[in-house]
Amino acid sequence: MAAKKLLILPGDGIGVEVMTQVRRIIDWMAKKRKIEFDISEGLLGGAAYDVHGTPYPTQTLEAALAADAVLLGAVGGPKWDDLPFDKKPERGLLGIRKDMGLFANLRPATVLDALADASTLKHDVVAGLDIMILRELTGGLYFGEPRGIETLADGSRKGFNTLVYTTPEIVRIGRVAFELARKRNKKLCSVDKANVLECTVLWREEMIKLQKEEFPDVELTHMYVDNAAMQLVRNPKQFDVMVTENMFGDILSDCAAMLTGSLGMLPSASLGAADAEGRRKALYEPVHGSAPDIAGKDMANPLATILSFAMCLRYSFNMDAEAEMIETAVKTVLKGGLRTADIMQAGKAKVSTTVMGEAVVRELDKIS
Picture (tube, rainbow, N blue to C red):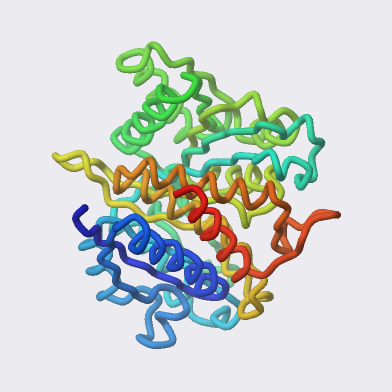
C-alpha cells in the first residue's frame, strides 16, 4: 500500500503524551501490517508560539495543505493566558480549521459497555448510547464580522460579535448531516434558536428545503438549542444524528461527551469539501483539551487520540478494517478492567498513559 501523508501536530500539554501512544500504533502497523505512513511533525498553539512567536506558523499551514490528513493533540494552557488575543494558542486551531476549509466537525458520543457505569447519569439512560453530533466549524459567531471591542463616547466599552450564515454554508453542512443520517438510522435532528435568531430561521428553512429536495427518505426534526441541551441529559438515546451551528455545536458536543463519562474517551473529525476525486482535507483530534494540570505526569487518557487515529484511517485512508481493529482493541482493554484516572472505577486497575497505550498494542497483536 502506498504511503499516506500524515501530519502530526502534538500541540501543548498532554497532547505530546497521548500522541506518543498513537505513534506506537503507527509503528505496529508498519511492522505487523506492512502499512507505511509518510509522517511529518509540526507545531501549533503554544508550542508554536514559543518557537516562532505565532501560534500558527506558515510552515504548519503549508504542511497541512500538503498532507492527506492531520492528527492533532491539543492546544492551550495557562502559560500563554496573558498573550494578546491574536497570539493565543487557540487562534492557531481556529486558523488551521479555516484555512483547510474544515467546515464539518463530526463528534461521536458513544458509551462503550465497559464504561456505562462511568457516566454521572443512570446506567439505563446512557447504556448503548451512540450519537453523532455534526457541528458547523468555520462560520457563525466564531468567525462572523464585524467583531471586536470598542470604547463608546461616554467612556464605557462595547463588545460585539456577529452570527451570520449564508445559504451555501448551511446547505453544505446540511448535506453532510443528511448523508451521515442516511448511513445510520435515517434520523436527523437540526438544532437552532429559530424562535429568537433570524440567522437560525434561515438555517431551519434551508434544512427543510434540502430534506424535501434531496433527502426525503431521512426523517428531519427540529429542536431549539436550550431544549436540546436539556434533552441530552434527560433522554439522550432519542437522538441519532444532530446538526447545528458552530457555537451551539461547541456546547452541545461537550455536553454529550460527558454522558460517556469522560472527555478523554471521545475522538473527533473535522472534514472539508470533497474534491473531484472524493478526497477531503481532514483534521482529527481528541475532544479533550491540553489538561495542563496533569501534563508530564503520564496520567492522561490516550484513548480519545487513538480513536481519532482510527477515524483518520476510516475517513481519510479508507482503511475500515484497520480502524475496526483499533476500536476493538480499545474495547477489549477496557473490558479487561484497565482504566486511566479520568475513567477510574471501583474494582478496576488504574494505569498510566504509557501502560494504556501498550495494552492497546498488545491487543492488536492478539487480533492480528
